[in-house]
Image 1: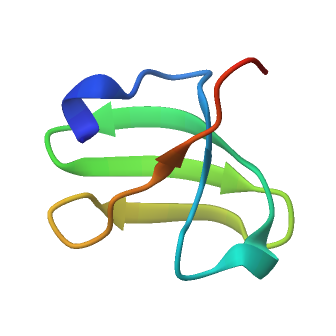
Image 2 (image 1 turned 90 degrees about the vertical axis):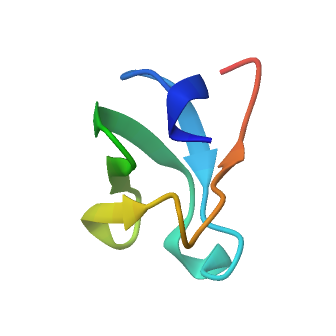
Image 3 (image 1 turned 180 degrees about the horizontal axis):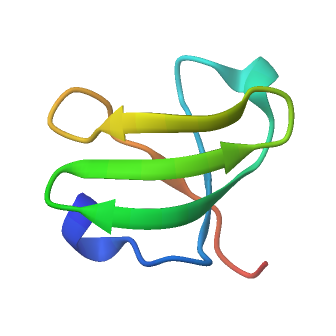
Length: 57
């Protein structure tokens, strides 16, 4: 999944809907740094969590 994500894209964390919308800040290998509305910056390991891409934003 990380290969498909780029900085600037919007995503949601499927297990943490209360975090709100997140914007991808960086992608390094399988690690994606996302700035979520309610949780702030979080590093997500995409080998464990598949982030949901939010198209059209």
